[in-house]
Image (cartoon, rainbow, N blue to C red; front, top):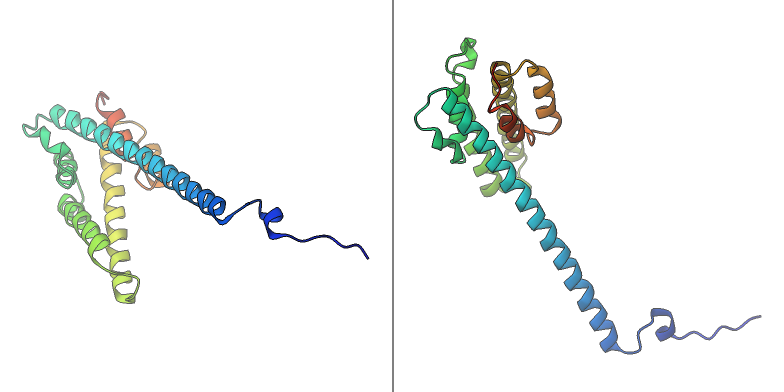
Amino acid sequence: MLHFPFHLGTIIGFQSLIDAIDTMFRLIISVLLLLIILLLIKLFIVVGMYTLGSLGLQRLLERENYKKSWMAFIPFVQFYCLGILLKDRKLYEWERPLPTVLVVTSLLNTLLFFFIDSYNDTYNQFFYLVISALFLMTVVIVSFRIYQKYTQSALIYTILTILSFGMLFPLLLFTLRNNQY
């Protein structure tokens, strides 16, 4: 029978408790720095997409001779501006209140996300799911109508919007800003 000497310090590689604490502290600091860097990258992407979407929406409003095109930079008013772009389109009767529905559902969606504890109550979860689904369906309908108005490939743009869960919508608005269609 072979006998192997067993010593905890040789397996773990720490000579003392201070080395272990130092290594753990370095690990925690490096993980926190990585999270901060990832958060900054995400913030940069979100601000960039918001700016591009606002610039594209402002340009589209200017093309429609809307005097308050600066409203494209106000977060929830952007949805109202999307409705302004569609005011000259021949819409179905059920599509007429879409801009108002879009503004209200976006506000409700945001407020519910931040102020309702939906983990404990099934009713709250269902209500939040219904409001979110209504908001997403409205965004898809409005984006399809805008794509129809400003491009020849509205279906492709809409599919890209749906597949990206709406994250490409600001970028696509920015690409449409100078289309002559």
